[in-house]
Length: 181
Image 1: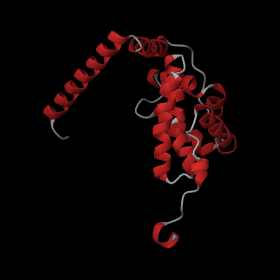
Image 2 (image 1 turned 30 degrees about the vertical axis):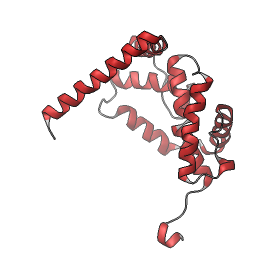
Image 3 (image 1 turned 135 degrees about the vertical axis):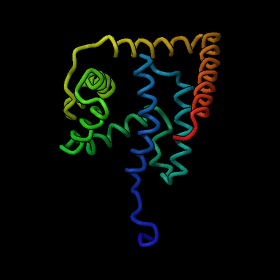
Image 4 (image 1 turned 180 degrees about the horizontal axis):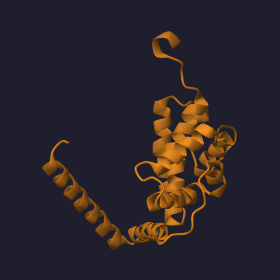
């Protein structure tokens, strides 16, 4: 009933949204860690998102989160025909990268990191200019890789988890002390 509920979302749009939060996140984690996650971790994560797809109303045969390979193939198939940056997307990206920082050092580091995460071809299509390599982005990549490596060591992983819980309590405490703004 389009009058009561509006125009329904088609299956392809639902699937690409699902993949943005499932497969793309796995790829981002793997890119930052410099390696693929274990097949068991990939399967568990995608299984969760397969269920989310079910809740969204994605038909069983259209839900790509049954395997890493199918999720990748489906996203690549859809992207081929929907991802063509236009002037509006280039303006949006430029504004997002400049938000609150102008054209200075932070903007250049954002561009460098965006090119790393998106790849040169898409970054070029979006008008993100290449930047000279910086120690800032190299350091961030090294730090994230090191955290990923430490997390795989049983005792170090437990220590990192405890440190994260403690730091989140500190953040909550400081936030509560300041009160609403």
